[in-house]
Picture 1 (cartoon, one colour):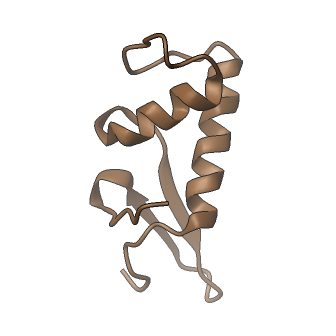
Picture 2 (picture 1 turned 90 degrees about the horizontal axis):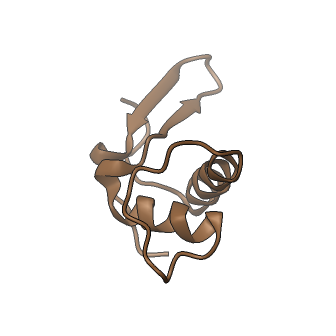
Length: 80
């Protein structure tokens, strides 16, 4: 891998918005829903905190045409 396995704030936002859209379109939910989860974004955030249940990965396309793909379990996730 060429780029460091650190999740950027832009990738974080893209992951959450994509997952929230999937949930609002009746996608399967991979975590327990409690009373604090009132919107699709809340459910997506809960799934993200429980990384084992987050079904998306990061794909980075570099200027030389190389594509790197990272699983979220392998990335360093800073606190946002």
